[in-house]
Image (cartoon, rainbow, N blue to C red; front, side, top):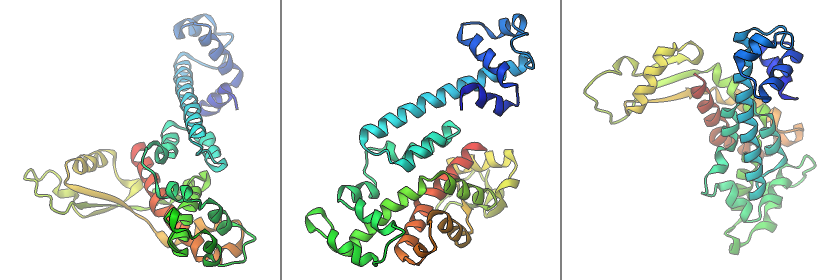
Length: 287
């Protein structure tokens, strides 16, 4: 989808007029000039809407530039799986894009990285295979190798589940499912253990439970101030079991895969270590 089509869809404006406006901007024409002297070419767009078009074009350009840099960086590091590429290509905002990329920014190896370096990627693929017939322990035995730090089949299975959890968490539709669940959940605010502030500014926020969608903006800003001051701890109260069932149905293509406990564990790891924290950060950033 080209830039004019994306912006026209976002703003509800005529695509041809948006395309003409973008062309005029690219030729160096200023916004007041286009609004005053090129009205025929931008029919259906007034000056305020034209400003929205210019701002949307700037955001889109920044997003596309960042997307290209992230793809190039991951390609260079050999970390660009097909799942990850699709997630990056489908990201609609800088915040979403950075959230996808965040685990790969650090030079510190993740548990999934270490498992891949130990040669456990083929085991992860075997565990996930819809045609799988063997237990995790049977599949893991050939990967036991003390020289690579894999002392037993349990260690191999654990490493492979971390690889799968990371892959599961990169799928846009399961990220969307998790975020939607958090939007509908409750937000818990508690006094941070050990806090002994004397200003008592945050006392009315201690031990509060509120539906996330119903927290007023001014109150949420107060919560953030309390958290920054070290007075409060905050978290989403996730209805975990129904969400795990829904994620399992979306992550595992066949019902047969639902019987394997190692795949269920990988989904739990994906939710607890990747999906839920990422969705929480995104929602807080969007407030």
